[in-house]
Image 1 (cartoon, rainbow, N blue to C red):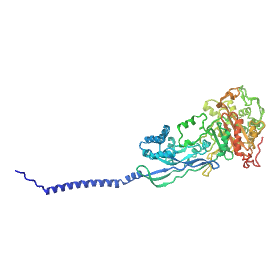
Image 2: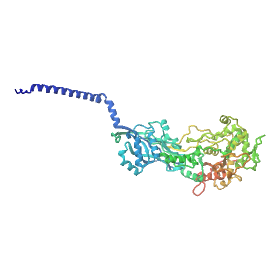
Image 3: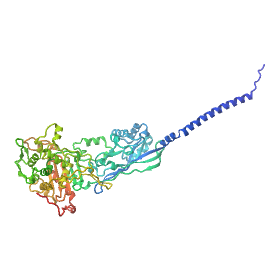
Image 4: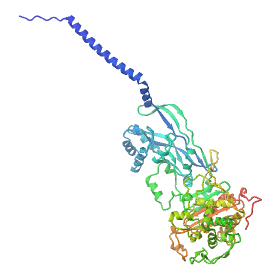
Length: 629
């Protein structure tokens, strides 16, 4: 029997569909409700938070480094400039695996492993997040093209135009002006992170370091909109930076070149000062070096060559070189002894070629072994007679010598704006007791009287002592800055002038110095005879190695670098001093024979016109005081 055919219950099916539709609609409305609630929570409840995140991803505040101030010589010749340059920068946060990116840079530009190590060192230095770090400076057109072609392999890498410090005078002012270099970790800890945002260089040495605050300027800012890859789309707001102040130096490019030429490639130092103002006209330390590679990062090999050179080109001999002053301090000793009352201008000492302390057999030799006979003050300075100054030192005693010589700036820093200057050493009883735990001996006083022994001075200190002789004790600190944005530097701690019981004491010592150059038995009369103006000077010899008692100096038995240093200090014209020059020639042996001609060449370059005559503005005034015996 066939089965009955089952008919669909349309009402039942309709009810089922309606139930399913209601359940589905409920689920949909529930999900929509949850979505709306989530959107409400994100867009309304957490609006401030997410809008801030969005703005931070889209809008960035970028520092704009200020343009560093320029540096000129006294005549407006530029000695430190800013030169446009294309640099390769890397942002660590945008680069991802930045070490791999560095490998790609080295591969693309075909660089060395040393340069790769230098790049990594720069990137690892502390800096603000997302701040691009320059890794390579002064890109060539070919390098820029290679970077552009491989840009897809270099996330976070950009080519940026920057101003880079440049020294057009090269090595001429390497020790005085100094140079800037990349900020290192130690410097970064002591800097204001806001003031140096975006700045990667800082003054390292010389004027660049001393006047860093003035030269640096004030940082600016700009708000920029970026895409997801960090590319700048537009600038929303900008606050321009304030450039650093321009600096005019007291140095003269032409005189600096003349001084270097006078030194003739020998190791040594020259300082020229204008006595009326304390302005340093020339400052030479030879050999020198080119400061430009230090700006963008000198290679390890190139730096090692400079650092390890036996001639020490990085060493600033003017400010850091310590040498016994030798006989250059005898005029100052004479002034001190006259003022202390231990001698008079007519005091005489018999010189048999040596000096002996009472009841002591040891002989302190004069450089002239045959002796000069009876010697007065004028003759003692003119002939640089050691015996006279042994006797003078014995009468003065170490305590008074120390007191007077420190007034001339020995054993202390004398400059206004040269932070690298060392203080030297003017020994005393207390110093020796603290240093060696020994008493001071009379023989040490004698050799101190001729500028030997423990005494150590810099060429700058000798130049300042000679300046005090030229100015009759008026203290003006030597300085390199003539003006900062038109304003002269101010000495906040001026030193007191040297006050003597009788100002004639200056004249007696100065006349002796004049006789050195122009007297019949002056040690540098050959140099003085060729001058068209009157010079007051004093030679000196600084021993490098000691000579035993009774032995005589024999240059043929001494290695070149163990020979005596040659020193000379002078000022001119005598009646109206316009320039003071101090010269130190390492291992030059003869102050009068080697250093004195260098002094005259420097003076000629400053005082004489093109016709070889004394410039009219330097002529002695009609009422000029005449040196008195």
